[in-house]
Picture (cartoon, rainbow, N blue to C red):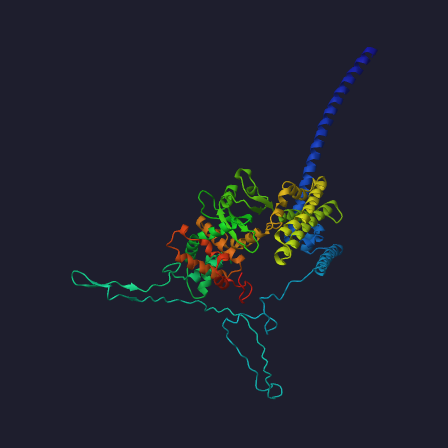
Length: 590
């Protein structure tokens, strides 16, 4: 082979190698891009796995663990051990870990009990000790049925005559009698006036104008039920959560056969005629300097243009004035801010609620000052603590412990000075607001500084970031409550009312029609407000039914329905309706 041919061959080989090199570079570039894509996918999947693990862990603790914050040490156990403990398949070492955690929990309880300043008063003023095993005695005005048991004449062992020491052991208990209904036979005599009530027609036939003796008008004229029975069924349904089927069965067991339809009709009529009383409660709440707001789901059937499975909403506002509690419910198909605007109108006081956007949209031009709920904030960090299972000393553990501890100090400052103001009467309202703000503002500043400083450490922690963003997005609104003495750090006042309503919703399941939902809102307003005042619900509802019956022929705008509200009742009537909720013994008036 000549030299030129060798050079040509080598050049061709070089060209081929360059082409192969180019292809390899393209392949490497493609593989590099795939590696980057796979790394991104791995990161996304890793985050999803961590998030799923946290959600699983949180579900396990919600299902099997305690919701109390004192069990934080127990939260550091992994979900695998929790699952094994549930299945009963723990090894000896794993069982020791569980036992040690429980010991830590018990030691926390003992430490808390030892540091407790004072125990609960187990002998309140309304509980008078009796002769029977130290139990309370009952109101002496209630009738007694005595059952006396005498000694035998002689000892059954030796036959000696027994000596009575004149010191009987007296014990009282309450018995429910099934025969506690009364059938009222209403007899209205008839007559005529021989002077002006007797006439003769053109044929000489005598005619008399018959006069019937007047009787008290009942809520359902000519109906089967008296006002007291209707009131009892209203309390059963709208406070105890019994369905009309169960109410009908209960009265059937007492010897009276009343259909479910009867009770439903009576409740609907009561809801319609008592609506002005509910509106008076609403007006009173909106006249207070501070209120609480919330909303919850309710299922309503036969709503026009909507499927039965869709959620409707029950809105609630509560008075935050100490010593003047009240609650108002309103049903609507929507959770829109337009509904809440229709409820509060131009209310210009303080409103405490959660972070739902309906309470702070700009288009409504709300006049109130919004204060957010610290309990919602703390709950997010508690969930993060449960879900993360952070070991003691880790970054997540330190971050959450500091945040939760600081929020606890904010609560403690409010409780301490509120007790001095309302219970002990040692400081004025202005002093309470000033001292609470002086102690709380530095705590809020520390909380903000700590959250911002730790923000970058937890960008991959879904639950922690959720809580941090929740706080930072509305940082200053969480402090708004400090400018109103009546507000607490959280919105628990309205949440307690919602919880009471949830019992009724859980047992009744749904409202059968929109009119029934409006009735539910009206009667819940009256029942829950009366319950906040610790009134005898049966007596109070009976009183309202009798009063609205008297006003039936008057125009609604000519009657001042605020006179029927618990705080406007006469002292005598308030004493009759004020009965301690946990005792048969009568209670002092509010």
